[in-house]
Length: 346
Image (cartoon, rainbow, N blue to C red; front, side, top):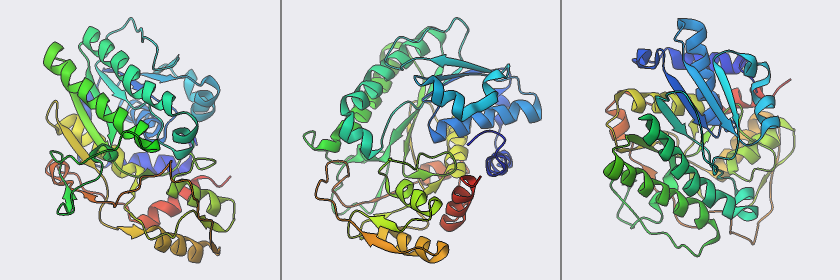
């Protein structure tokens, strides 16, 4: 994926049509960590579009530890005057001489492959990385926009139908997958305490199941990623369970517009849910829809090792706090999937 991709440009212009007060970004300097991630990349591309379309003069520092991947994702865009690459691990001290206005802290791995093979790396990025980001924010008087996860809510009581931001369930820290939600919980605790002790402002985003162009689809392990990979490669769709678990997926443009709504209209030092609950679907139903649409078969390869996957019943997120800011999800599930599949076509 790159900035000039037709599907990406269509998506960016769609976001631009949202009723957002984006002049707040004019002449600002921003830092985006985890720049190679799908959501981070789309956000960076959107800032580039604001510069190209409205001459917003946003200077964008993009942080990634993988130079080759950064160059691959941004291609020639790293030669732009508005893009400044920082090649480093977020777990290392971040040094920038200029003033920073906003830090979008998005550096974290959540895929099952990383959870199985590099859980300590996940914990370090979420804890040490968050400390480093907040130290920089304290020095620069910057506001932090932090991408957390719906998984911090854990296992909810049976009487909870939709999870509000003030709800909190239980997590078992000895479960293999706990490296991700437990370290995200700690990162949120670091956020609030940097505000209480040092006055560092932030907004906390609890995001669920985002997909779209630019997502990692090979050797990822997440449900949507694996299915999109099978479709793109014209392979039979393989399910690793009976497929009865339910999910609700949010297309990347809806996620980006939600982030922008929260940044421009949300309250400081509060959490916001981001998800699309309009088309909840079982994994089996989704696989069958994709198989029918793209002429494939569905096969099952049940896995005994459940370490990489959450093992409690899904409960939907209550997005009313975000919707009060004026946001609503607009991209239908199959439309978003089709856009994603076509973005991988050469």
